[in-house]
Length: 436
Image (cartoon, rainbow, N blue to C red; front, side):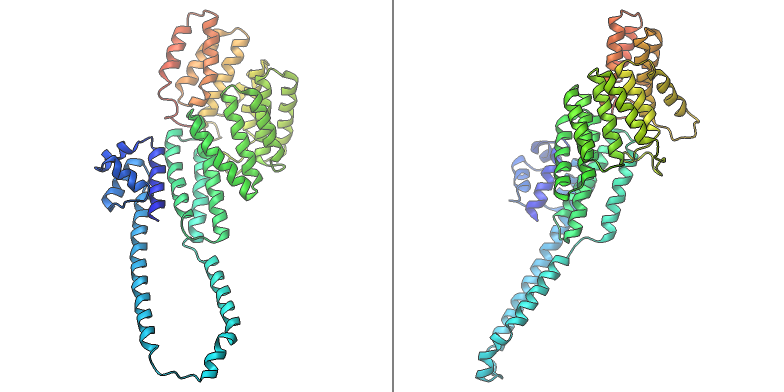
């Protein structure tokens, strides 16, 4: 348990971007001591774990694990003492009078062999069913994931990431404890979905290495559990990462992989198909792009609006309008303007639907891009400024604005320097504002 606690400390420390030296200073220890603690070679008191928990942003996970370790040590000590007393008592009783006859003494082991096997089987069954985890905790964790998936649409990525780290740390802590097979599988599934959402947030923040690591976890959980939906979403998320990074051919391949493994009629089937259309648009394959746009509309048409449309993994049919605007804008189709204006109209302040800051900002960028293609550069500049100043642009979407800024600068428009200044001034705040 001490080694496991040390591993969790190292995990939280690295996630917080701290070195062992940084943590040593924060906990008033030296780096060597921190190294020994992380490797399980040394212990530490509660004051150390409280300071480490706060410094690493562990949300109480490290302190709780330390207290459980202390409780386990006390239980182990008491159990050892009780066992020694019983052994000593047995030795004393062994010198007492033998009540059984010699024959009974000889035949007892053979007669009881079946009973011994039965007891061993019962003990194994008890251990399989033994657990430190209750149904209430598992349900609460599943509900917590659903809440985080809903909050993705309205929470700053950096803030959401901290909450995800806390939940992931807690799941890792529970996996170290006693669980039944069914509970272990549910915990793994929760960890897989949390890792997938964390990968999406890392992508929004342009943290490529962290996003890749989180996705590997999600893919491995999907493989072990046979969860095709999680597997498909993992491929779709990877496709989006490649798309925002400019690797359009790989994004196309990953989108198709996601679509092939996605359960029929699922939200991820629609989303993967949409990503395929976006990748085709960036590759300039107009005819195939329009074919995919039509397919997405066919998939969406029979669907009703979900009860929680803001849930990141529940496809909202209204999202189809935004998707169409983006895809047509990328392929250079003038019809994109009509779709982009429709998104802005639907999501304007006072509209009946819930506000979606990121969708509105992206719709303005789509609108600006169509204006660039039709040489309405003044309007394109104004619309792009509005999108950049809205707070709805995250780092993974800034490249859309960068394309418009570059196009305006290439045309030599007088407003270009001002637009560039707005673009640069919002660089530091992207990712710390409200999400989509």
